[in-house]
Length: 423
Ligand code: UD1
Image 1 (spheres, helix red, strand yellow):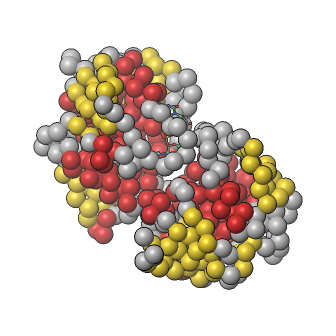
Image 2: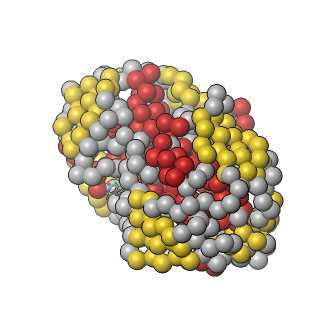
């Protein structure tokens, strides 16, 4: 198992390219199941989660070819020959549940294992199932699998999500494109990944309006055709690397970054005293000399502050002047990075979904353990600001969502290396 060693060495300067969004790509890939014509994605990120989704699609009989060093994914589902998404692949990644809606919509039947994924709370899939049931699917849960059927095809329906779910909105949106009649999804998620999915489906011939608002209307069509679509930039990778100069000092341009993708986050960052400027190349982030100011943060669905940037923001707050209160509203049990940051000298008090962080002058390098994807990168960010070596183990979490993190940070002057852990 690999580990990453970070040695705090002062300000970072230069450019970091932002990849295509993992979470967008993970929902765009299953969209290939909706058509027997090819779907090609460009600007795909090169991540282990993307390989897991490729394996899952291949296990169903779809063809997935990675071209241009993995930047382009050429997919075709004309030879689909298996409607069962097996536990062995699904358990690796929760987003696997996103094959359910498309398979059911096009094939009238699907069997999908209940998913695993990051250990951040219970994370059920009941909303995915309820939305599909509203469209006429019959569902049976047995032996850890969802057995779904819609022999005469899905039917358009009005469905209101009791609370916002990104994945359930994506599953329902994809399924509704091939349903008979009109579907209205209320209290739908508004994340940029949903908009990206809707735009791709529109290129494939789907009739969708209202994407990016909380009410999406889908008029079902008989079939979808092929398309080529570029994956939207990864706003979580963007926000993560915006925090690198914020925590270590310096000035870094995030190439291809867009302010509209991270508006709420950028506003909080500016409130700490960090400068964020949109340029023709991307987003430039600079920290003037001295410590940043503490700010309070509450996570919320888009356009609010993303839960996927909470751990990284906490790393910055650990070195801020003053006390900040971080409230996690999306997931229970998403403060597993806090005890690890405390090993580095951070002062954090966690009570339920609230963490109170009192900034310290300096963090100290320590051996720490990554417990989930975003937690692991928060430890690397903290390491950039710490004295001495921070050794982050279990970095397979990191590889699920960040491509070449050590190359990207080295390029702006960080001392960071990957080591093989033989222990
Ligand atoms: C997606 C993202 C993840 C991000 C999250 C919230 C992908 C692959 N992952 O996850 O990185 O942290 O959005 O922005 O895109 N819930 C239920 N029942 C359901 C579905 C969800 O109770 O059927 C709950 C979840 O446990 C959670 C909340 O709803 O507490 C939001 O989850 P959701 O928006 O569905 O997250 P994901 O789509 O899994």
